[in-house]
Image (spheres, rainbow, N blue to C red):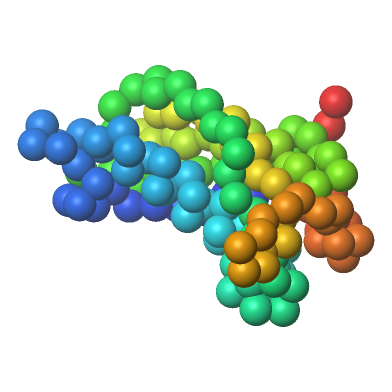
Length: 139
């Protein structure tokens, strides 16, 4: 199973030529991850921070920009889980617009306890791990 969400390319996302300025794609990727946690997993970032004193910072990302995306275009972002570790989650995220892929990204998150002056990885809670497993890509 994969999670999908649509994003409208807004004026704020584009450069003077009217195409998405590449750093804005990273914001859209992060918004997709945040929406997945809230809408699909039931663990909003607010809940993670407030109830669990935890977060899921990105520790690695790679991205290929496959075609330009333009102002007014609607992009479909699709997220799947490539790997689940003790505390890490490796995601594959793709975006498509106008019937063609525009980006492909890999994102590694680490479940981390957030305490004053201290950040350390910790095992994923069983309830969160079980929710994440529903989005694992076969193979």
